Each structure stands twice: as C-alpha cells, then as structure tokens.
Image (tube, rainbow, N blue to C red):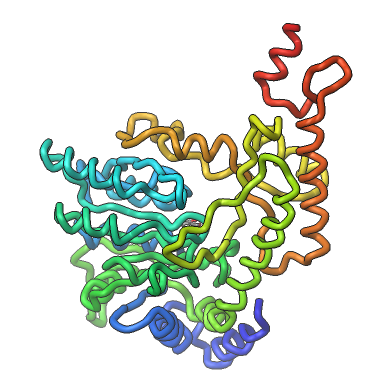
Length: 391
Ligand SMILES: Cc1ncc(COP(=O)(O)O)c(C=O)c1O
C-alpha cells in the first residue's frame, strides 16, 4: 500500500457508500481513464477474469465459436472463453518478447478464413508486463475482420511505441488482483474505445437490472461490479503506479547484474518497442548449461523459504484443454521448460534479494559441479540422473 488508500476507504465508510455505487468508483474509473489517455472509457469490476467475460460477451462470442488466445498465459485469459461455450485456439509465442507470434497469427487467420473457421475474437496477452507486438497483430486482425482484445492484466504502467498499455486495441482488460503491480485486493477493469459498449457491460455487471423501480430483467446479468470501498484502495494505488513500475524494474536490473556472473542464466528480453513493467522478473536457466530444471530450482529455493515459480504452463499442455486446437511450434513449451519466475515484489528489500541471488548461485553451482564419481549432482536433470545410474 502507498499510504494514500486509507483516506479514500475512510471516506467510503463515513459516507456509507460501501457497495456497488459511490464516488470512489466514479473517480477510480475516471482516474484510470485519465491516466490511459484520450478517448477511453472504463468499467471497474470484480476481477480481470470478469472483465474479459464481459468483453467477449459484448463481442458476441457464444457456443460453437472459436476465440484465439496466447498459449503462454494464466488461465484467467482463457476461462471466460469457456464460460461462453466457445473453444480456445492456442497460439504459440515468438522468442523476442515471449508473446503471441504475429506471423503465426497472420498465417492462422489466412488458413481459418479459407476454411470458414475464423475466430470470433483474438485475445493477445502482454506477458509478465511486456507488451506484445500489437500493431502487427492488429493489422492482421483488421484484414480478416477479427476483433482484438488486449489482456493487459500484467502490464499496467507499461508502454508500446509511446502508447499506454490497454489503449492499443479497441478492448482491454486490467487486473487489480493482490499480486498485481497495483491492487484493489481483488478487482479488474474493462477499458474500451466505445462508451456504448461500456454502458452495456456496466448493466450486465450489475445483474442486468433494467432502469425500473421494481427488479425487471430482460437479459442475463452477473454480480461483477467492484465495490466503492475497494475502488478507494485503487485510487490510492494509482498514485504510485509509476513508482511501483520503477521499483519492479530496479529489482529486474539487480537480477540482470547478478546473472552476468552466472553461466546459463538470463532475463526475459525487453523488446525495443516499449517499456516492460517487469511485473515479474523471469529468468531463463538453460538446463543444458546449468544442470538444473525450473522445478528443481523452485524446490531448492523453497527450502530457504524463497518463493519462486515455473513460467506459466502453456495452456495447450493443460489437461483441461487437451482437445483444443493449437497453432505453432514449441517456443512456449521451451520457455516453460527453462523459465523461473523469481521474487519480484516492489517491496522486496535489497538484502532479501541478495539472499535470493546467493541461493540461486549456490543452486546453479551444485547443478554444474560434477561429483567425484563423474556424474552430476543430485540437482542434475532427470535424464542426467538416469544416465548416471545406468553407468
Ligand atoms: C494474464 C492474465 N490474465 C488474466 C488474469 C485474471 O485477472 P484476475 O485474477 O483479476 O481475475 C490474470 C491474473 O490474475 C493474468 O495474469
């Protein structure tokens, strides 16, 4: 927290605006829109997942439709497709940014158009705070008449070619979940160029109540609105967004400096087209050079009470999506096989980070040091271990 939040929360309590209407909600929506720039409208909702659900419904996604989406992402980018009875089509990453590959998008849309199976929408995720190459994707989508949605849940504060994230497509979603760069504890936002779209989604998010004294409903609604109390937290958080991005980037820079001394370790590259928020710092630890796999690194760091995680498991490899169509090769799978998300909080003290780096160094050194009998240490990947026991 920044210290500004409690004032707005106290105002909500003092005025008794505690639920799904109130001044904090109005101001928070205006302030985020103001931060993003001219011509966008916003709707504060209960989560980023809810925001995407509303957007896809507005775009007319329904049973039997297809929606294309980055495969290297969190399930929140995909579940709303399923809520609407549609099928996700997973598209692989490109190596430069780790995001959805524009050339695959173009090729996929060309083939789908020829087969009459164009998707109803395409959801492009800005992974770990780094913007995808959205101009190239938007051009292909425009050519084939496919609406484009930006999943900016991880990238608020980042930019693409001088533009703010969440303004580079007609529809975007933000997340203010507790782990995000700024938070309302739980929450999300729809950002759209169409005020009309926002008005309809606003109605759906409050149980689709018609403007009548009695409760009249002509269409299906959801209880998706953010509360005026949580919007107060958001207002305080928004004031420190740039500071938070700078802190996260400083964390990434300290890791980068340390990686210079570690063989086989590197950071998710930062693309030339924009500012990466470094919501999470993600390390590539090439198992062929380091002798360790991401899960082993996570386990070893965990023993020192350091929480690290593997890169998102690509959605096309999830048991739930075993039957879903996929496009592309193995880039996302390779990133999953070698990537580790390191502790990246904006409040991570430099002394704690030094302990993380030291533990990581020890872990990699153990993976690289041959034992007396010539085999790798117990940290070595499974195929090395099998090899050594066979010997
Ligand atoms: C890329 C991405 N999309 C969507 C979501 C869903 O947001 P929420 O947790 O607010 O529902 C998240 C994060 O949680 C995310 O990281």
